[in-house]
Length: 470
Image (cartoon, rainbow, N blue to C red; front, side, top):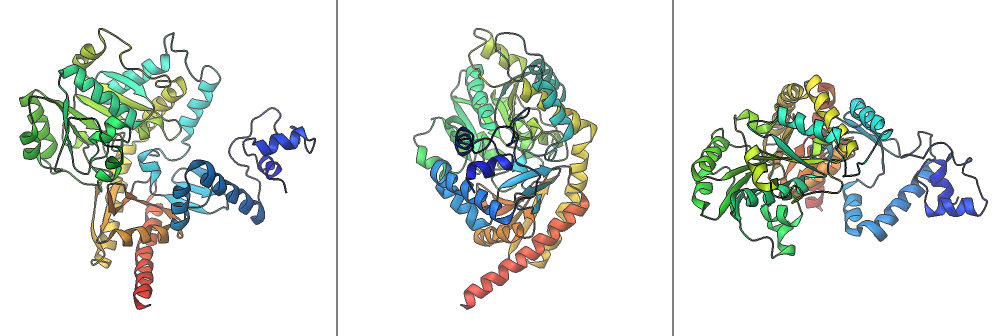
């Protein structure tokens, strides 16, 4: 069967093959369901195994030729070479009909779960008015979201610059800190992750991602995580700000000591520095409070947000700042930092709906309760395999399990996917498997994950034993 026809009959976005089929008179737009509605995603109609195999191979071929050959090779090795087809709540289904509990959650994107109905409805409504603004008139969703963020964020954060991602938010934060202070340097921590654009990458604390792109932006100094004395010792007359994640995500779900963040706030106040807090992964309920800094009563001068802010439906990031910072950055030139797509209406209504749902459904409270339940279960599994699992840690539904060997952890990820659970290791610490499911996950689903994790560790050890025996 021609691939273009196959794509169309299963509601794929029209391809070159489909257009050729129509032009050649093999089929008509009406026959292929292109009249009155655009095909979206995939059809719910049953597909034969041969059709699924053909579609999957076509996607793999396109990844190899046009996306990233190494990436698709790694996906195949890990058992992730399936096409994601549909998702809802805490579950994802592939094109073959296999359902998985999503414990990766898009690295923190899907705090509200997949396709939260309130967010989807808000975006659909906005589509009938103006999806993307002209950038010449006032934008009500942008104004409403900025005001809502000022209402819910800690301290004196009042203004918002809206963009499309966490790394863009960090780039804005770095520029704002330099502009507001007249200084050039930053203190960040080893193991930190703040993004992969050039400025954000300079703040990131793992050489694996940095070395290929050196020289990076000068003026970044890295100190050990959770060491306030090291931060104080690194301050110079050039230091503009301290950049910190309340809980290191990609660093391996590293928890701060209770006095760490308050100490950084005191250092910044005493030395006239700005405190930039990266809440891209921790923000909006994941740790059991709306923002992770709320656990320690710390208010930043600048905060970055993204991931969950779009409700799992739209990409959006935000850089929040105080009135004093905004005055120094934007008074002379309101367009000193801008974004063509940032603050678009669709993204902003998604953000508003996401915040509303987070508050109305008390997702931070659910994260705290279910997170404690989940962590207790992970710690129980750790006691079953003490020679392999070093520690289970985290807060709310931002959890991690550290292995004694990163290769064992990677093997366990593969065994879990075959048991219907999606997980991944943290980018800056491959020994740690992260569990960051949607905050709507149920205790029954958590039980299923714990069973799969325990069985997956046992299977991985059996496989390693067989290899060693061989």
